[in-house]
Image (cartoon, rainbow over all chains, first blue to last red):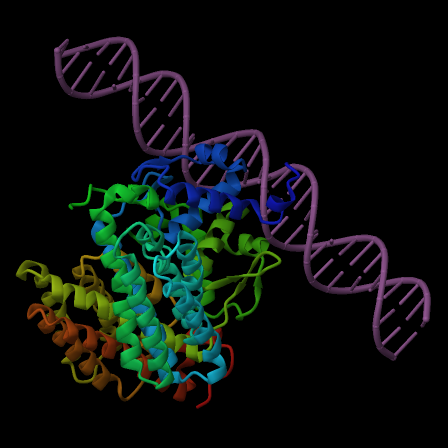
Amino acid sequence: MSDRDSERSVSQTVRAQLALRDMILSGQMRSGERISELQAVEITGVSRTPVRLALVRLEDEGLLQAIPSGGFMVKAFSERDILDSIELRGTLEGLAARFAAERGASARQLEPLKECLADIDLLVRQDPISVEAFSAYVTLNARFHALLNELSGSAPAIRQIDRAAAMPFASPSAFVMAQSALPEAHNILLIAQEHHRIVIDAIENREGARAEAIMREHARLAVRNLRLALRHRVHLDLLPALALLTSAPAD
Amino acid sequence: MSDRDSERSVSQTVRAQLALRDMILSGQMRSGERISELQAVEITGVSRTPVRLALVRLEDEGLLQAIPSGGFMVKAFSERDILDSIELRGTLEGLAARFAAERGASARQLEPLKECLADIDLLVRQDPISVEAFSAYVTLNARFHALLNELSGSAPAIRQIDRAAAMPFASPSAFVMAQSALPEAHNILLIAQEHHRIVIDAIENREGARAEAIMREHARLAVRNLRLALRHRVHLDLLPALALLTSAPAD
DNA sequence: ACGCGCAATCCTGTATACAGACGGAACTCA
DNA sequence: TGAGTTCCGTCTGTATACAGGATTGCGCGT
């Protein structure tokens, strides 16, 4: 076994899982393609046992599909599947926000969320938003959503949200980098940030229905982004996972 | 597939998974208890490899929790966790019902659902409902919910619903057998059936919001049932999975 | 008597060997 | 020439062997 320390700290199973997931999401495997264990062994450099574990986990994650006769294949997604996954995430995040609002959040609990909001404000106020700013936005946006979900105080809800966000393109930040090449980019980020502001306000005032509704609408920004990205398919290299789509999407 | 054939035809992994799940849900393992692989090997009679696969699947299912230092333990659930899981299922089933309503369901698609509804009607019209009728209700109710979810036409939604329903007590029929010993049993079944009727009506008329709202409320019947079951804890043998609750719930 | 350390034992994670099954290709017969 | 059958190769599912590490219990020292 190699002595590279950084790779040594995590288990072989996790390493294989990460490698295979990257490979799938970066579009290096065609959807529907059978993924043989020996092939995965060659790719990841670990033995069959952890590879098999990783494959099982990726199946549960939703990226692979079990073949009845045995083994796994890369799952194919229709455009409908992706839109539904986004709606699912929005619905679940809406539930989490409603939980947070109904159960009440103390000022101390809201503080990190407000800090995060302010940090994002600094980014979106730039007029031509730099590529680095987009990249920073991805990080802060993920942090904002994570904090918000935690505010629900519901481990089962967080679990289901993470699960939903693991689907291709269903994550809150899935399209941000693709946006960076679109003229509408700035507006979309401004609107998204307005949603962030509203959900905090709603939670603060214990307006459960409002918090839920705005998070649903917030997720639907991703639908708009997906449509935009499909229309300007020149930016396909920014969304390599588009290769997982079954049919060529209509314009 | 029949159960007896499956014991021979189904893989060792699935067999181990079923055996362990039964063991956990029947309360034969205390929550928090470490579940050793060798122990699981003795229980299931299969080798360590399929046992490990089964443990990983059960972790993804939410019944087990990975221990940082390695291995798995039986997950502990708070009463809040269970209530949240029920709300999650209701929210997701509501989404599925809304999808069905918004996207439209043909008369042919609705037919099996209406048949199922009629079959349940025959059961709940009996005045003292027999224990066999309760048992039949469980089957038909599961069928009704499965048909309803399929009507959404959304594989991702069905996936998430199944996941949510796998949590202890979150399944649509989790409390039915416990109800059979309660005086309120008949009323609850009548109300549940009324919900079933309404959701079909809403879908037929493409009333998405109504379909969603009624399914959310429908799930909340389970909350009421849980509270009732906890109050009359004499029927604890009908709900063996109560052993998975962390603290003794307050009356 | 109590705390710390060491050692032994068990356990997990990983690798590999083996058997059964599925699929594909080639050959034979009509 | 086409279809069916048989054989071979490959792959999955399962079992087991091995090594590193964690935990527990005991003994020793303070």
